[in-house]
Length: 217
Image 1 (tube, rainbow, N blue to C red):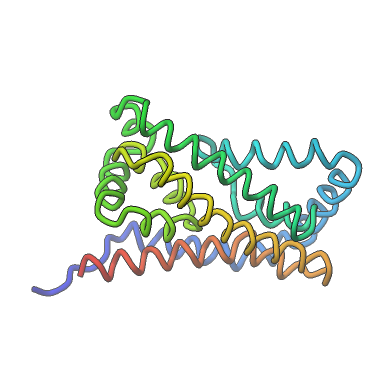
Image 2 (image 1 turned 90 degrees about the vertical axis):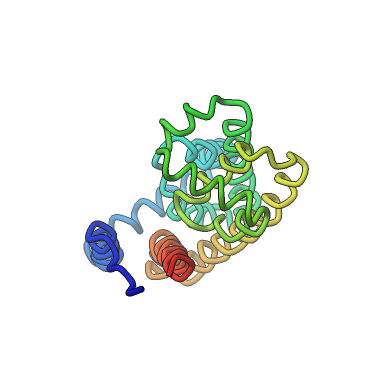
């Protein structure tokens, strides 16, 4: 059977993301660097408050459109590698545990209404079939990471198993973004900041789309 072409909307989304990732660094490089400088200053003056804000923002990413790549990278830039990695990890764990709790104890129709029936059903099937592997692979992928945490709760995965898998997966993500953010500050590199804020999330998302297309061929 001949492979059907991808829906036009998918290609439009991919094209828009590519334009975005190329255009944003060129158009807003100075503004982004100014914002990072402001965050660095705030972290120096009130480090506990700045860390708490970042952790809360990452946790609320489950329900709000928080740009994880930007938040993670700026955390590494503001706090350096070891502390930044810890701050990112705590925020990602907060989102993961909140997603699991929502999927496990909230009504399934509510999850479908919030995320969409297709997304929840797909993530549920994937969580049941692949278990921890799916959780680990999806962790750096925007949107899918939150959906998979909820799906693990809906699927009834053991909490201890889920928490252990998420702790390890989130640690890997935290180390990666903290290292990029810290290196960007050390080298005064806007390119590294853009890589962490936009480039890596886009790369992970496109990679997942490629895997999905390969699986459904």
